Length: 147
Image (cartoon, rainbow, N blue to C red):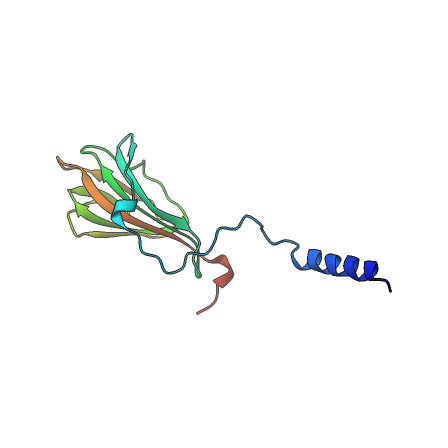
């Protein structure tokens, strides 16, 4: 066996060990502090949004957090459903949320949980912008069935 054979063998083994591994995987979010000053507002058609994060964690395929200011009379989006779950924490304003087939009024301090695949929506029924935090997550598919 020549040195060339050894090098080729090692390269082939390395290629087999990395086959199927995504090179462009996002880094897993570890302990992090998000400073308000770093979250710049971005204007939208219905108000503004401050993006906090959108990345995988050790136990989630994706954790997405943002803060929305929704203008009076506006809806965040049409009623819809998705596999991921989310919390909406209303800081300011008066809103209605579509939850379990019913529109319900919510005020400051209210927390809305949108369960997986349940129809939901959110709209500002007040006279000032409604400000709320959204925490949205998708479970780690590799951990299904674990407790």
